[in-house]
Amino acid sequence: MKWQATDEKAVVLIVDDASVNVRALQHILKDEYHIKTASGGVEALACIAQEPNLDLILLDVSMPDIGGYDLCKKLKDDPKTADIPIIFLTGKDSSADEEHGLSLGAVDYITKPIRPVIVKARIKTHVTLKRQYDLLRAMATRDALTGLYNRHYLSDALKGKISQAICSETPLSLMIIDIDHFKQVNDTYGHLVGDIVLTSVAKVLLEQVRADDIAARFGGEEFVVVLENCGVHDACIKAEKIRSIIENLHPEGIRVSASFGVVQLSHHINRSSKLLNHADKALYQAKESGRNKVVVCREKTSKVSRTLG
Image (cartoon, rainbow, N blue to C red; front, top):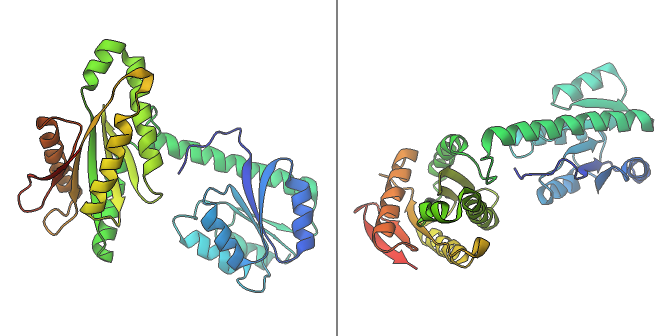
């Protein structure tokens, strides 16, 4: 989930195989929303993959490829799209049809012909509710200063990532990042400047991680990045890239660097506590050996086996 300003226009996807209906809805909604369109279920899925932060979907029931009910069920069964509100907008006006649509997880069911005032009012209601839900979820899972995930979210999400990696037999790597001499920054320049340093580093992490990775503030000046489907070699390359970017940041004209401890999920390092503990050992080695470097913790020795930087 991305931070999103509440004054930005919401993004609404219209899915209908009748172009006349799409044009009518576009005309009604174009001034208040960013409009995306799809002429069927297959095209809608492609559009959603490209635009994951949809605020609402207007969905026809009768379409030639994937029917609206089937598409709704598919979206609600996928955790990545389950929270997007869906409004059925259809000519099927029986109570049984409406009941079925709502039972699949749609938030509303509007029958044709379109009544612009009603459509606009209901869309506004559900977009507002979606924005409020997103804000509450962000407050519960995000660090208020940096916008990264918080430690509570990391604790739960890391366990899920580990289980998924073990079941799918795919690699998983984790890095702990610590800003070097951060206490000196606060003591010398003050905590407001220290906050700017923290947010600058966090911005780098947000820009460098992929959608399925986790970037979290672990506490104080420490951060954790979880890299899905990523072995230790590639994790080291990513860590070194981040280290280099941080070294060249100079927020408020201050020279900043960071130390990294990296570890990969393995047969023996197979729990969240073990991953964090071994990454922390590598981080300690990085700091003890001069800071501003990447150190890898290997499974057999739990000691330095490669340093970069």
